[in-house]
Amino acid sequence: MEVVFRMFKRLREDLAVVYDQDPAARNALEIILTYSGLHAIWAHRLAHWFYNKRALFIARVISQISRFFTGIEIHPGAKIGRRFFIDHGMGVVIGETCEIGDDVTLFQGVTLGGTGKEKGKRHPTLGNNVLVASGAKVLGSITLGDNVKVGAGSVVLKNVPANSTVVGIPGQVVRQNGLPVKRDLNHRDLPDPINDKCCQLEIEVQKLREEIESLKRGRDVNRA
Image (tube, rainbow, N blue to C red; front, side, top):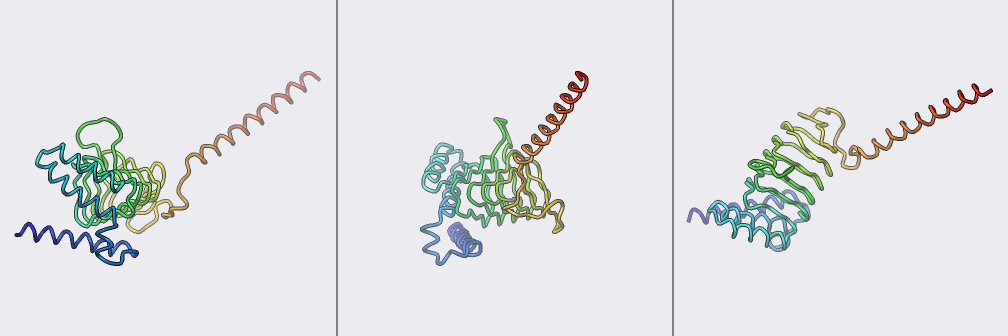
């Protein structure tokens, strides 16, 4: 009986966090029937239970069925805390050794993945109250501390201290403990390494042109 009570308590928590995070949510029936992020979380709990019982094949089958219907892939081995919210959700991938704290929010296209074929802990650990915005990639056995925010499209490859905001490719801390470190978070104004490299190449090409012109002028003077 106590197990059933805890289960219904968790279900109510899941519904409450959707109401809290998504202003478009209107009623419980709509959330239960139409929110794919919620479906993926509920399926993961079942798959994770089988995974812990070493029924790995069944766990994986449940995970893949959930992926087919929701567009969200959560490995059965991932450890996920309470009040986890996936907004929209399509394209979200969460790896086997991920550890996610309480009150974490992920948006569509987020990857919590590895960086190679290494064994053991190879996926990220997210603290409590972490937000990872659309399209961001958090890769490798790294840790994001409590209250971290990751900007849209960022690629995070190193540990991030608590109470920080990260943007860019690779991700850089731009705000920590409420104070700007480099630049404030703006999803429309992220670093563009390709554009930066093109600008550097243009500068180098201009220098080469000037050197060639200088050599031509020196040669013409010598001929004269």
